Length: 340
Image (cartoon, rainbow, N blue to C red; front, top):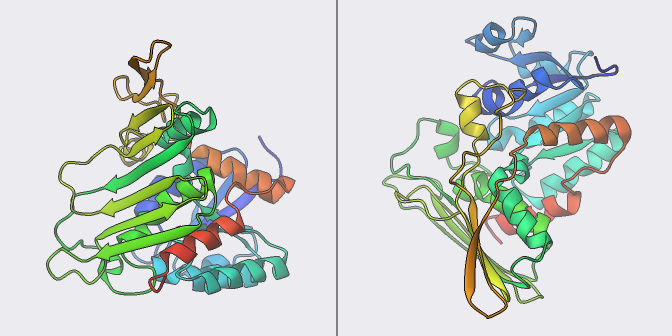
């Protein structure tokens, strides 16, 4: 058993808390899941009988035993709750989007520094199997110099959803913030800050109050152009990663299985967790020595959301720089802000 565990509380037990946080905190030997806020139904306590089920955010944040607060509440509450937790002397792991604006993000980083605490962005999709395959191809120069990259997040939800906070025009609402933040983070982690940006957003579902479509084009000094598309109106999802370079192309569908496994109740310590089924490999196409184009399958990477929590531990306990930097968050919000 690991000594000096990080005692952790989660602010919500909706899908995010139930799927992306509680299972990992529960089985990671470096953490102790102390409690979760549940204002009405006590579903978390049924699943994890040893925890405290707090009736309010204030109760959890004011618990002196808790060292790390996971802010996974609706987007427009992230800043207020993160600020409250920091001022109470807690470290914070904050869901995407980090904040609605660059100004608010800078304020949170400043308060964290003043309090001697860490505020850590939760960007788990850097640990998606499909993105890790793309990362491997880029870092190993397998298509030569990248020229064009298409990254998509396609869903088909033509009706207004039941989650009111996602369908209400409040700060950080809409599909560009919700899904686009993931794809921007992946892009920035690979290529850094772009030199120019073009953004298109649209509201196409009947009576929609928030954007349900978005396209962001990023131009890099190297000549690379990245096309990021997020949509709730794609009935036939396209390849999630299409990369073209001076010496080949790579195509990969969205194939990460971790979310589906977690929804089905699989815990992250299951040996089958994160393993992509055969037949979903990416396709890498390059010219051979005779300039004939040859395609081969790229073996699947292991999806590893637990890797994020391992990084949280290393930052808080060992002082290791976190894998998502302050600059990357500021660059992301500079692009996401509606007036940009």
